[in-house]
Image 1 (spheres, helix red, strand yellow):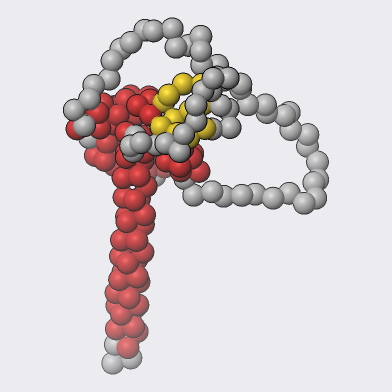
Image 2 (spheres, one colour):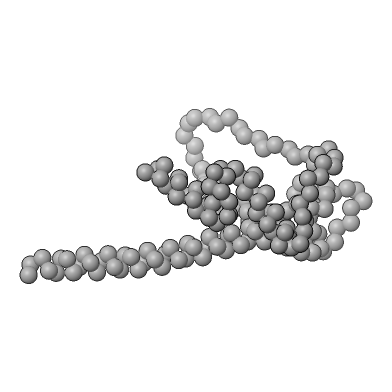
Length: 171
């Protein structure tokens, strides 16, 4: 049953992203396809540019402490709805909005966004990633709303059938 559920999700992802079902397990492929489509829609293209960007862009890795088994007091859990996509949307994080790392002579304007790690993005336009993620997020919210309405309708139908079956039992 779990395997069938996984297949259902894979086919749904394939349908939404409009890609072959065997590609749904590659998040990089999906992201590149969605970005390429958005760029083409805007009349822009993605280049396979091998400039020396890597030497400029360095990122610290996350520190993950080794867990220590035991009982802990005052433990909290926070659940953020689509936290990482919302961060990308909030800061317009996308290759087409990337302006570089902040330098001592960088001029920040009201049209730029400076992130915590001193990366600068423009907010002169909605980036391709912001557009894609907003569309996907809004679609998810709409689907969730439709599911709730459908569940309510099915619940009413189920109750009606149960009631009808029970009322006719003693007839």
